[in-house]
Length: 213
Image (tube, rainbow, N blue to C red):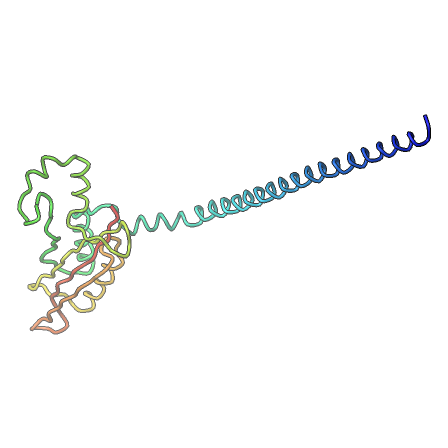
């Protein structure tokens, strides 16, 4: 084997080794690039999971923190329009402040009435029990536009003109009504001073009762 042939063989081997080195370098770069991309994705997922965990922990703390508030809201806004209970509470408050009432009235019921206010027999026969129950629950109520799911029931309360109430007791009576969970707001007041004694008066009130059926 002459020197020239050896030279060509060695040159070919060097070229092959160089080409192999380049190929290996490119492969390693490709693998490292993929692993780097996977690492970035894994870090992003880990960061998102960590954020969700923090949010979950905060949500649990908020639930625990505000659960008493939820109970207070449920106690302040009744879930039913139990008129008998409302009347009992009104009478009790009136008795506490020596206020004599002549009447307590509610809006006319729309149950069984069509658009013209007449009985709707067809609706009654086709309505399901659940529909009847829902209609009954919402009868006499007006939806509060600014608070979804909350309805308004107005109650008209009149004092007995034959037994006028002293002014200071009337004021205390009003305060007690607004502190009561069913009669939360006095929306209208009409008073008539007694002719015999201006310190006494008769009255008519419209109370707003808020309900979340």
